[in-house]
Structures are given as C-alpha cells and as structure tokens.
Amino acid sequence: MQITSLFKEVLETDEMILDDFKIAPYTIDWRKRYQTSCRCVLRPKSVQSLQKIMRIAYENHIAVTPQGGNTSMCGASIPSVENSVIVILDRISKVRSLNILDKTVTVEAGMVLANVQSFVREAGFYFPLSLASEGSCQIGGNIACNAGGLNVLRYGTMRDLVLGLEVVLPNGDLISHLSSLHKNTTGLDTKQLWIGSEGTLGIITAATLKIYAQANEKITLLVACEEINQVLSLLEKFQFEYMHELTSFEYMSLPVFELSQNYSGISFGLSGQHFVLCELSLDNEQGFNKDLLLEQLLSLGLSNTIIASSDKESQKMWQVRENISEAQKNTLGVSIKHDIAVPISSLQSFIENTELKIKSEFPDAIILLFGHLGDGSLHYNISLARDHSNEVYQYEEKLNQLVYTEVIKCSGTIAAEHGIGQLKKKWLSWVRTEQEIQIMQLLKKNIDPRNIMNPGKVLPD
Ligand code: FAD
Ligand code: 2HG
Ligand code: ZN
Image (tube, rainbow, N blue to C red; front, side):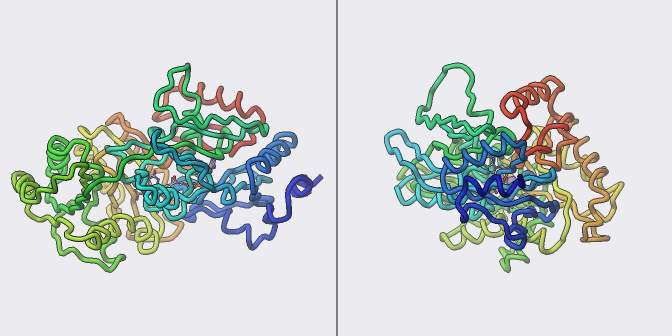
C-alpha cells in the first residue's frame, strides 16, 4: 500500500497535508541551505493520533522527521532520506498545568516559545529561554535541540530547564514522566536522552519546565570597546560585581553591529570595534545605582556606553541583537555558519588566530562574529565579498576546517547550541570520542531499532 494510504486509514482528513504546494514550506529550512521532498506532512490533533502515526511508521519502516518551527540552523528539521514523512506538532500545543508552589509549567511540545513566555508572564512568573526565533520555534524543537540563547549565563540551556518529559517512542509507545521534582536521584536521568536528540529517538509531546520569579528591575546597556580584552575584563568585572544579576552578555563585532543597525534602521551613534549588550536583572527593591555602574565601566576605560533609559530604548538594543541573522541572510546572502564555543579563557587567542588563518586563505572573507560570549559561545559566520550566492558553499569544507581546527586547539566545540543535524555530522568525531559516539549509536539502535526517527541526522551513517 502507498505510504499516504496507510496513514489515511487511521487519521482524519485534516490531520494530513497532501497538496505539494502546501507541503513545500516544510521541505526547505530557514537558511534555505537544504531543500528536500517528503511523502506528506502529518498534523496529529492529539498524542493518541501521533501514537497511531508512529505505530504505522514502525510497522512499515517509514522514516519520520519531527518538525517544530523549522528554524534549525543545521538542516535537522528537514528529511534527508527519500520517502519520509514530516510530523508537525502545531495542534498539540496546549498548556496542561501551572504549578505555582512547584514553580513549574507543563506545556505541550507544539507550543510556540513566545506563547509559553507570555503565558508564564501573565501568571506573574518568568520563563527564561529566549532566542531571536522565539516567535516561531516550539518548545519541542527547543528541547530536541537543547536550545541556549540569550539567558544561559544565569539560567542554563534547555537541559537545565526541563524537569519532566512526555515522549512518543518510535514504536508508538508513550513514556510519560511529567515530573515536577527538582531533585530525583533514582538512577540515570533518562529524559536527558531526548534533550538534544534532534528528533532521532522519538517525538516529544509535552514537558514540565522550571519557571522563575520576575525580576524587580531590568537594566540594559550597550558598551563599546576598542579591544577584545576590554570585553573580557568587562565580563570578569560584571560577574564579580553582579554575579547572578548578570543575565545576558551578548557580543557583536563591529561589522555585525553595523550590519544589523543598518538593517534595523537604528543607530546608537557609538564608535568602537567591539560591542556588548548586557542585561542585569535585579531581584531586590533597593533600586539601581546607575552612578556606580558608570564608575565601574570607567574604571575599565569604558566611557562609550549607553544605559537604556526606557523600555523602548532597551527594546531597540535587543532589536539590533536579534535582527543579526535576518540582516545577514537578507543583506549578505549565503554565509558559512559556525556555532562554536571555547573556554572563555581561550576566547581572545581563538578570535585572533582564527581571523589570521581565514584572512590568509580568503582575503575577501567578511567575518561576522557575534554571540553569547558570557557563556563562551560565539557564532563565527563567514560571507565572501566575491559572491553572495550558493556558489559560496564550495568553500564550506575548507572554511569549516580552518575554523574547527582552531576550535579544537582550544578544546572547544563545533556545536554550542544549534546541534549537529545534517550539516555537522562529518565533524562530530572531531569533538566526541569514538567511545562516546559508540554509546550514542548503541542507544539509537536500542530505542529506534528500525532507524525511522529522523534518519541521516547527528550520527555517522
Ligand atoms: P525545528 O527547527 O523544527 O527542529 C529542530 C530539531 O528538533 C529537528 O531535529 C527536529 O526533528 C527536532 N524536533 C522538533 N520538534 C520536535 C519534537 N516535538 N520532538 C522531537 N524532536 C523534535 N538556537 C539557540 O539555541 N539559540 C539561539 O539564540 C538561536 N537563535 C536563533 C535565531 C534565529 C533567527 C533562528 C532562525 C534560529 C535560532 N536558533 C537558536 C536555532 C534553533 O535551534 C532554535 O530556533 C530552536 O531551538 C529550534 O526550534 P524549532 O521548533 O524551530 O525546531
Ligand atoms: C543567535 O544567537 C542565533 O542569534 C543565530 O543562534 C545565529 O545566525 C546565526 O548564526
Ligand atoms: Zn545563538
């Protein structure tokens, strides 16, 4: 029987998208780096429907790619084998419960991140995961990628925010362990297997997440620096003076700052080579000492600073930061992306050495360096002045090699927050040992013996 007919037998008509024109947006990724095909897009209206889908897929060896908001930067959300089906979760997207005493919210996986944030905010609390794609990415996708974003410094990545999970396994069985416990030392923490698994071990349907008190006051400031070591001194100083109150420490190099300011139609009139966007979230009610903050900056020779004087000004600062990916895509076309992290103590040498290596082989390289410097992760994106088209991909392998060689010299990683997907599969062995990869393969074989869950992603073939 045809693949689509098998699903038609158990699903309602509105749970299947069959029209090629309507399927098209699901088969191309956000970057337009990967384009593929699929048999159909399935849109289960309940967890039970999803279980039926997985039973059929399992019995008939049909490859399934779960897709959330399709904002993956490494081709994880797009099928990479023929005859796949895509499963989307936008109809499994309710809030299941809010537990104020436990400080948790339980939401379904298809809920858009921004909706989770606003639900929690309206209840008087705070959910800290925040990324530029929050208007379209979904909690399930965030968990499957172990998303990081702008507040990792204080709250950690998705791994730190999930207390319980509900998952449909490749054979259709359901594991439901939506625990609200902040402590549970009963053997291995198996939920962590699905966090960061990029859809290769099953489909996440719900999660219990930590929520926090809202800050009493937030201070946003933009600091211009001439030298990268000033940026690092600023981080050191703020971590010492403000500790947990420092929630974001985002870095933008001059080309990135200019590109995004122009794209956003905003100018802060700051001059420098390096820019830092910081957020301090104050929990006490004593009010904020702006003079002290300025003094601290001056002690580092940093006088070129703007402290946001209104919510509007703070939003503008964040707009410039959050528009970077769009600005890059729409202005410079193709960029070769690297989502790396190195120990903060090695950042300066990594930045200096990598630029030297890249420029010596690609003198026309436009290096777009920005990211979550406070937690050691940076986006090292490269465009070439000679060409903005897909032709640039012919240099991807060489550029990856140059960047990743420097990353490895610093004991860093090639995927700090976007994952491996199909893009970085061949580089996995650069950062994980043979034994670690074997353990991952063993787990995959056991949980997904028919290799139907998002095949062709993360692990070597
Ligand atoms: P998708 O892209 O749809 O899927 C990603 C992976 O998760 C795929 O492997 C997919 O199969 C799997 N998946 C999706 N849903 C499920 C599910 N329910 N169960 C099992 N597997 C599932 N990432 C960061 O970490 N930090 C950032 O700051 C950041 N900023 C971004 C900014 C922009 C403009 C864009 C486009 C992306 C950004 N990303 C960032 C990358 C991206 O990883 C996140 O946007 C997000 O976590 C992906 O969620 P999604 O719902 O779009 O997942
Ligand atoms: C960010 O930090 C995202 O804005 C996107 O992780 C990074 O576009 C990129 O390379
Ligand atoms: Zn990022």
